[in-house]
Image 1: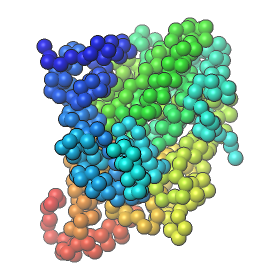
Image 2 (image 1 turned 90 degrees about the horizontal axis):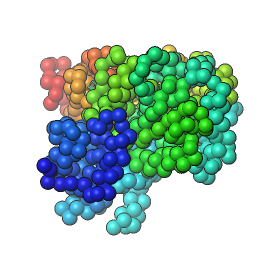
Image 3 (image 1 turned 135 degrees about the horizontal axis):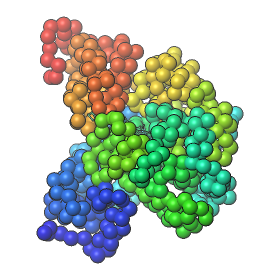
Image 4 (image 1 turned 30 degrees about the vertical axis):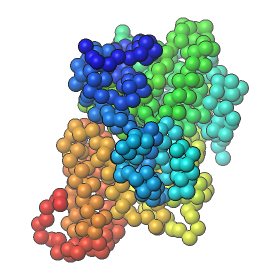
Length: 158
Length: 431
Ligand SMILES: Cc1cc2nc3c(=O)[nH]c(=O)nc-3n(C[C@H](O)[C@H](O)[C@H](O)COP(=O)(O)O)c2cc1C
Ligand code: SF4
Ligand code: FES
């Protein structure tokens, strides 16, 4: 038996999700999203639990978890800055934005601050190239960035 | 000037809601289809429209639908590809945000045509707000009885599910997408069998791009022939062109298939910043072979671009002016394909990595003149030797940038490099 478990609420959400698919395992990605919401990140215990829920070996969960970039298997900062480094953003100066954030947050790319306040990532094209350079901050997109607008966003969110 | 079909909703307040959509004539097409047409007639109309698959490959949509086996007792599925991750591409995001019910109506009609009672929208994980909007609007459609059982009082039932990806470009490739939908890592499958025969959950499945499906209601409303005539030969209708990079007005422009690239850049996207000159254009997402400034009098449709050795792809136009470091541009693009290779095939997994490292070395000032031919060699060894087209998508930019802008690369290896000129002796590919 796993050491973690969903709340009643997540459990009924899980049942609703599973019912949408012809096969139980197809609920893998939505269940991992649900788990991340509930537990903050997907630890090995959570992997085992998700495997039990979906009736697949835990290794199948690990395989999925490590394949996709969006799931957190380690704790992430409260503010997750994902700056696009794709070609359209590169043409419009994303390097400056990345360097500016590295300096402001005192982090290298792909690092999380010790107090879990910030994570900084460089990511591939986010499908908003008309607003380049752009980034995703948690769930929201911010485009047409300059170092000044980055500072404004930082001040507002801090 | 042809009017607009999808993008006319982009500027309407609340264009994503059911009420506004209906006020502008929405959900009339599906009503008519369900009452007056047999599924086969719907497919015929789409065939007549010359609607091409707008996700990149340009396969005629009606032809694809006709591959669904009629006598199979298995359930059929429609899967809408909303993974939109090809660099330079952002049109489907607009459709999902602002033509939400147009997309749903298209899904209903397509599902009816292929005999599906369940449809999935597979949306890239980063599109959190878009997924929220879809889920919310699907609820509204269920509340009205437009989804679910006995739609518009007919025998047609349809359930629509939003499935979020989780950050993997390869899941835009249709068979990787199906693996991902089934809860696995996104490793492309060998074809055949094609999805129309054996797709999601081993059942006949049609995978279509968001934009392809979004044009379907209008085609059934106005007729296939009408739609076909809006475009160019064998490339029906209008199309959403995304323009990004060095232009004054980056954005999405809905124009007839076959509009010239020059017109798109200079008339619609506002041209380049003052004083700048055009250096290069990628016409259809980052995997499309690059064009030089002399090649932009081309019609933007699948056949015309193929004729000059490039492709329309996702019609994501990436404009580069004369300030662009072309070596860096190729490095950024190659880094992307290396990062996104699923690792199944050696030529793709290793080749993209080698190419990225060599390009990085050139950028760092340590290039050698043999690097150029080595890169071309790597590209040649990837092309055609892989399970899915991601390998080609990485090789095509390598080939085209290196060939068309060879002088830039030669300057880069000699300028930046202390030893570039003696590089005829054997050097290791990798350090
Ligand atoms: C590496 C790769 C990535 C792809 N990404 C997408 C994508 O993000 N969206 C899309 O619609 N099609 C994408 N495609 C094309 C799909 O495989 C498929 O052809 C398409 O979804 C079919 O729909 P259509 O006929 O309506 O274009 C991709 C193909 C490859 C090889
Ligand atoms: S070509 Fe690349 S991405 Fe496609 S299956 Fe092979 S390794 Fe994976
Ligand atoms: S390249 Fe940055 S959003 Fe597309």
